[in-house]
Amino acid sequence: ELRSAFVSIGKILSSKKYISLNFNSNQLVGEHIYTVICILKNNGFTNIKSIPIKNVSCNSKNYLFEVEQIRINGASSFDIGDTFLDNVNIIISYHDKMEIKSHLM
Image (cartoon, rainbow, N blue to C red; front, side):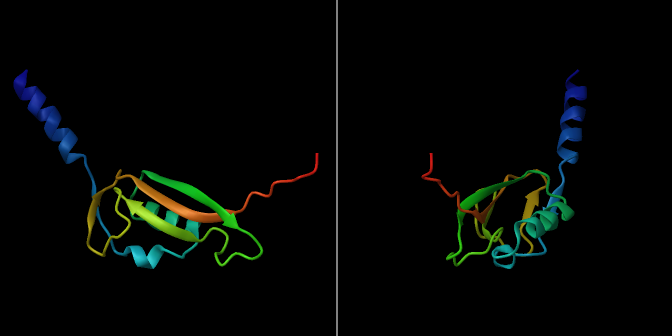
């Protein structure tokens, strides 16, 4: 039974997939959110979440769906060649339309 436990652990460890980045954080910041998500998914990442920053209006300096920050495993800076598990936690913050509050009732 102990031997089968080690075999099971070995299968779990060998099933982990590591991905080496072919881009850095600066290359993705400022791009469109959907482009960034496609790049990350095409590279094999599976745990991607996006968070809107609702601050885009007519006078905004930011563009709609522009990526502000990408955090991989909590870090906002990463380089080409950095390696992560395919299911590492990735959070993308991007600019979205400001919510307009109506004063009409």
